[in-house]
Length: 629
Picture 1: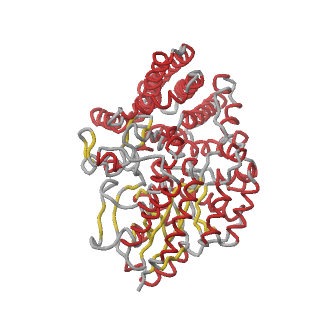
Picture 2: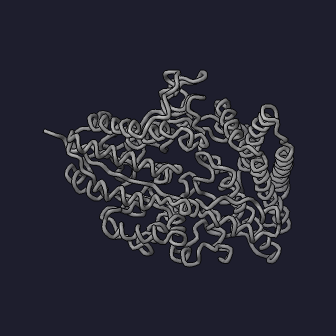
């Protein structure tokens, strides 16, 4: 008798509002900021290329006759409404017909480690408002949510409970990702749901089904993935290559790619028990390869259905909870305890701007063992923690100036006003800008210079607004005399070592290759890097000056207006200088004449930067904090 297998096909979709930095920069009189380099709008760019991943998703669901579940950010929905109204209409119709089922997420792709519970609740409410009040999607029977980057902090799950969530999507459990406790150590936590704090239902992401889609894509199109750091055949990319010390074959055919993923599905179906759950959740766009992922998944699932090896039920979370969870009763499910978990690390190396992060289960590499020295077991949110220095500092600035961290606006207002936030009054604009600083993509996997600049532009504008308040209203009383730990100042200073210094170093490495091997004149790029260094040094001097003002004057009187003016001037200039320094790095790339060679050189440099720099930098800052205390 064939077993029943439930399959949830879920997708996460987000694009930051690509045009927003241009709007914000125009409000600045300093031309070095106003004319800073802007990124392409990838929603518009893909439309011009004739690509439409949202149509592809709907076609995938229709062809496979499988409902799909989608969490989608407000920023992406807003852009689709303005740039791709055809896609927006398609999504509305797909929701209405139940081809797509809604899953709530953070409205602005914000990361849990940078927000408090009130902010998390506001983010999800904004997302819910957009999905139902603007898109018009029917409400699900069971409320569920996806935390950005599948990053869940047990201490903040109360926010999900306050939002009346029935379930959350949970990352797969492995000792490399964290430390866990189990009410029943023998229970199935891979193919069956379980409970977490506040009695929330957790639906586990199936790691192989979700993540191994990357393997055939990378091997099918290795040349296209080189720009993302996956240089097949030049260094180890996949876990097996680390373990076996040999390279995998690349340039496989489409048929081989489909066969490889079909084998993954077969293995998981064979491993799963009767009534087991295979939950696929992955980025829809998949770093610009979402269309290939859908092609492979569609063909592979069709082959599985033809094999008739199990009763495959494509379901929504609502249907799964009704069919399985209701039958076994939620209170009978096992429970786990944890601190933090995300879906990092994955199956491929990540060459981030601070160095080499090996894939999951890499075995042993340069004297480190994956099970013993896991970066993520120590700090599951290591990719996003660096943002805590900057956003935590601005949390404090807003609080002491009597601003709330929540904006108390609706999705409809933001949509109707087209995110022209510079028109908003300060008590609304500043919390919104602070929230946008907390996007995971500003700090996470491998943000480029454009996304790295964004928080500093927001910081510049926030500091400038607060500075003007002190000048216009010298008698304005501060709400509190809450102090901030010196840890933040040290973090803002040391952050420059990874955000700026390493970028300059690998560009010098690559430019030297262009000079020696290709005879290029690299003087224009070197000049930009010299400018970047100068602004980086200025940024360091400004944050040091701010700290000096804080310790010498503000600790004595946190309500002195003149001191605040001097302090905020230094903070504003710190943000300005980091923005300009990063912009100069972008200009060095532009002037290089051969970005392809430079990209390859960058990744080779980063591959050799192991262990990565940021984890040790955090340890150093914490040790400094302990020494001071």
